[in-house]
Length: 216
Image 1: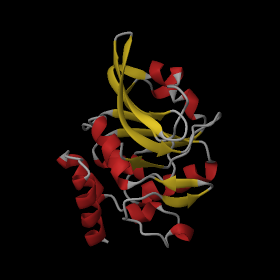
Image 2: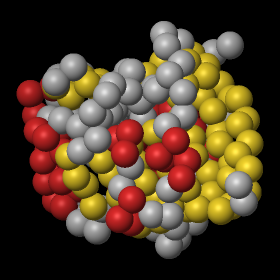
Image 3: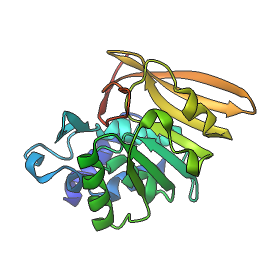
Image 4: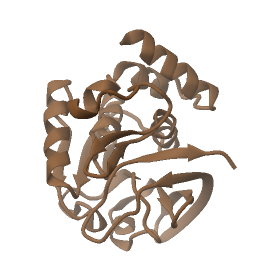
C-alpha cells in the first residue's frame, strides 16, 4: 500500500505538517497493519479515524503527525504515550528513534498493539495495560509525553514525570477540546494553547486512543 501511504502523507503535508522526518516516518509505518483484521474494511489511509474495537479508534493521520511534530522527537528521546490503542502512534515515535513507553487501559488492545509492534519491527516499544493517570514512574523522567485522550485538566502525576526542559502534548477539556503544549522549566510549567481537536475522554483508571482534527 505504498501509493496509499504517499497519498496520505501528501494530505498531512497539505494540512501544514512540515517536519521532513515526521513525514518520512508517516510514509514508512504501515498504518493498515495496526487496524485489527475485523475492522480493516475502512480506508486505512484516509485522513480520518478508523474503529479498532472496544469503542476506540486509530487516530486521524494528520493528528498523529501534528502531535509528533509538536514534541520535536529526536533519536534517543524517552517518550511516554498515554493511550496505546492500536499501537500506531507508538510505531511512528519509534520510527523516529524514540524509546517509547506506552500505557493502555484496555488489556485486549495492549496485547494487540504489542503483537503488531513486534511483527512490524518495533519490538523495543514497551507497552503495559494500566492507569494512564498514574503514568509510568519507574521509567521517569521522560523527555516528552504524548496523551491521546482528553482529561478535564492536566494530570499532576504526568507533570511530575516530565523531565526539566521536556514537553507534553495533550487534548484538554470535554467535547471539542483544546490541544495544549506543556513545557517544563525547573518548577515552572508553561501551557501553550494550540488547535481544536476531538478525542475520547480520559477516564479514571486509564486511557484510550482516538482523535481527529477540527479547524477553528
